[in-house]
Amino acid sequence: MLQVRGRAGGTELTGTLYERGERAPSFRGAPDEDAAYVWVCDEFYEVDSGGTTQLVDGREVNLAFESPMPRGFDTREQALEGAKEHVRTQFARIGVDPEDVDLEVEKNDTA
Image (cartoon, rainbow, N blue to C red):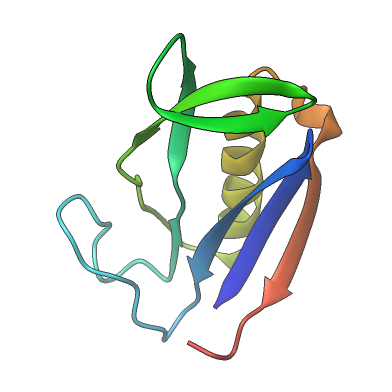
């Protein structure tokens, strides 16, 4: 499995990419078991009040979280690009320029 991490504005977001042959979590809305690669990561957006407070670029941002939306991909290249785009999009949803997101992919053999 791979961890795809984005860092920007003093915070970070990490999701998990399950590779071919690894058992991805199964829950309502999860992609078909036959997907070669499965991406799972939080989704969030900024709200005026409530939610979870996070410090981003020196300002307090209230975040509301959505249920993770797992996605299935046929190839590793598609999966990695989809994962990176997802992370950039989450930062954009809280006012961070997607170009400012530093991305890192790390192999995780401990799961």
